[in-house]
Length: 325
Image (cartoon, rainbow, N blue to C red; front, side):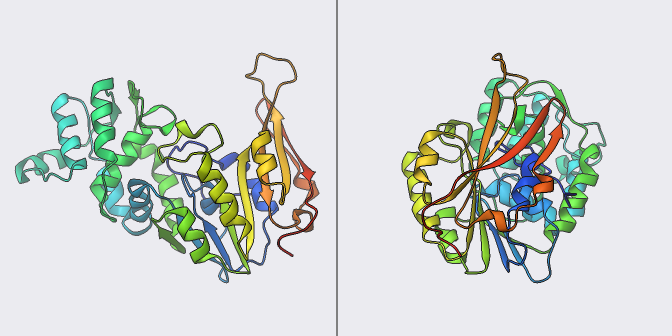
C-alpha cells in the first residue's frame, strides 16, 4: 500500500510502519473514520481521501492540534515561521520561551528576528528544556502559527519527539517542507478536533463508521504526556464495546489486554527483533476489532519487510459472539 502522506512530527507510539496492516482490515465502504487518539496522525495521513467518507482527527494535546490546524489552514505562514526560528544563544531561547508563554515581542525585536535566515539548530540544556516543557503544557489558541512553529521545532529537536530530553542536534527545517506540504493537502478534507477521546467516541459513533483507537500502551503510559491509567484502559474498553460502528484498536501484546478484549477479534502483528539479546526474540503488537476482519483481509499483504525484520499477521482469537455484523 502506498501512503498518501507521512507523519510530519515524531510522536511516541507512531504507527507509520503499521499503516499497511491496519488499513487492510478496515471496511472499505465506511462513511466515517474517527481517529480519537490521533497523535502523529499516521493512519489519517496515510489513507487516501474518499469523497463519501468523513475523516476526523482528534487529540487531547492542544499544541499538537494547533500544529495540525496550522498545517492544514496556514501552511505558508507556518513554513515562513519555520525558516525564521533560530536558537543560537540564551537570548534567542528566552525569546522562544516568551513566545510560548504568549508574551509579545517588541516590534523592533520582531523585525530583527525575521531578518535572520539561518540554518536551525537546537541545543537545550536540561534546565532550559524543563522550563520550556512547562510552558508548552499551557493552552494554545488554534491557528497560532508562531506557537505551532515553536512546538514543531522543539519536537524535531528532541529525542524521539518527546520534548522531555534535549541535546545538541542540528535541524534544518527546510528538509521537512515537502513532508508538510503533502500532509497539508491530505488534511484539507479532515475535520480536526481537540476533545477528550472518551467523550468524542460516543458523540461521533455511527453504524457505518470506523473508530480507530491507538491509546497509550498498557504499562507504558509513562512514555506519553497525557495521563492514562489502568482505569482508563477499562473505561475505553466499555466505550468501544458499546459502539454501533466498526472498531479497530492498536495495543501492545500483553495478557491483560488480551483478556480485557476477549469479546473482540484479536490479531497479532509480529516481527523479528534484531535488537534483542535473546535469540529468536520477537516484537508483537495487537490489532483488535469488534467485527470479523477476515472479510476484508488481503492475504497477499500479510507479510512485508523492513531492514532487518519481517512482519507477520495472524488471527489468534475469535470471540464467541460477534459484536458488529
